[in-house]
Length: 124
Image 1: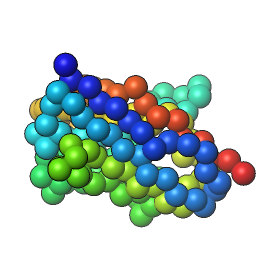
Image 2 (image 1 turned 90 degrees about the vertical axis):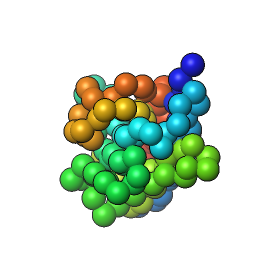
Image 3 (image 1 turned 45 degrees about the vertical axis):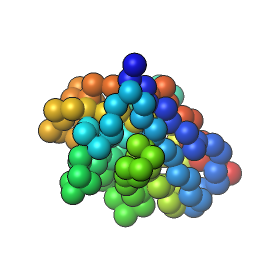
């Protein structure tokens, strides 16, 4: 049974940092493109970042470039998203997703498996 489990969300003040993580079970994440998406209340799900199988291809949504970093920890079958200089617009539920044949890293339709999400709230 394939499962993706996110963790690391929480409440942080503007300008602060968080690292959210996605642990895979029932699949080897190194064989999949992994993406991070987020959804704020009343809004649609938007792409945040994606990482290729060998971590040679990295994609970031424009608003997070220079602030967020996606990375793999193959030994732990985990993908991290380090988020720095957070602002209130970064709030939402963060989901990770894994895709076997994904080409458009920021397209949610190209992913096969999804986690349940972790809440990130940026507020003073």
